[in-house]
Length: 640
Image (cartoon, rainbow, N blue to C red; front, top):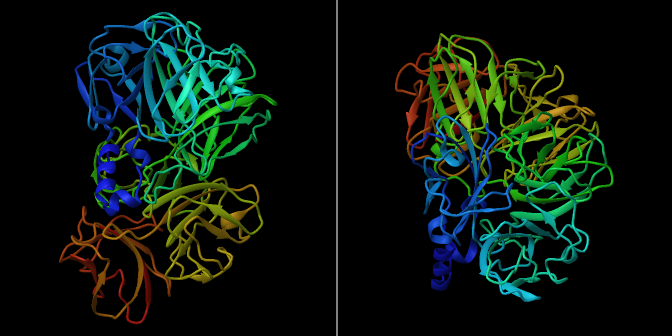
């Protein structure tokens, strides 16, 4: 929702404006696209036309300059973070700012046919980001007003009428009002004071008369980034932080520093401030920051194509440095960063925005439209075989739900806006189910075991009602928590076994911020690498629940309005398989096809096991699946 609209609602006293702030997905976007060579519109949900802001573009697979345009200047007047000169009157690079994104033209820097691009959109919003411009007057000191609504954590200044340095103020520098960095090169911190030895305030920042910031008659632009420190006003309660400008000290170890942001980031900008000849680097979760694998990065100070390095892992509360290169982790060096929170922050109201089922027969790689950026995918051949799971957090590593095997690698790509690219072939057809991480709906957590009872943080926002956990680096059973069996029992996703009493969850029910683990190696072996998938119920979107079979037919009310598109059922009181039904293959008033997560069996066409029901689904006890035996307990997970 636009800031202007929220302010109008607040003035009118509406509940929506009084209780909620902007969500991060309304003010920031990483959007990946392929160039077409013809003007194309990018729809990322950000209102640049009405609210203003900054658009930063970079081709990923070529050595070409970064391209920055903003709402304070003509869109034909660009800047390049790796160049010191302005670019005035460059048409057909960015054609327009729109109410829900932007339109790129035909030039190679922004839209060459067949080339891959990354875009980062920063919308003006209090306590997040602002853009200001001025004409220099040669005075020292001079105050430049801004509308950030808080003290800037970082601001970047560039002359837009001449060839000058990019100068960067950052609160993480020692005596930041006396020092600055250069965005366009790899130099260490400079002691030249462009800020007239004056700290910024929540209404203005101060510049000297240096040509880089305030020469008489020259024009300038500044990009201001907020630093939230428990005072952010974002999210449903208007109390969440979404941006941090901070610093850390390198330790020179692959077990690097772990930075607590209070949120999981989606975007990082990092620079070694101590040592020269070390590049700025830009990382985001769309291009890929992979736990225990190579991460994609670009260098704002260079025109270089995208490179990869095992640099970081994003955690539920921040990020962890995982390597020793000088540009991220030299022992004793100071590194400054800007980190932006992962979205979405809004609870989904439409299941089609966070879940998709696709059928396919493509024999030379699988491409399809899920309609959203995919965070987790589960797929299998309908003619039988392993049931594979991939997730954005671990990238090309996969596990199989029907086995105990450790993870392995396959060619797969999450770095696009609507699907997962999977190589290989499947002549016999497949079914693929995709999830997007969203509050109250679904979350993914990668963690390392300790061997001692402990808690693990998550970002589901509510208590998980079902969790699937698998050790990634060794042969081990899957462990499943379900609210229908409680915190003293666990199930195994790869077997048909009934729920068994155990201490996997340390007899503790998960909360809205963490889940608890005992010492069982299935969930918490010392130094073991784990992945956890967390599920919950959202009104009208998903339902985690249980029922007692009656031996005939019964309706399972999930609170939906148009029936269930996906249903997972497991008898928990006795041994039985994990059955998946979906409406794409057929949940009908007749025979229904199903697959089983714990086996390599081909798709079976059951007798009439399950029927459509507007509020959920109907189960029968007429066929081989056995999903409604009288007196038996069943757990289920359904998506509208």
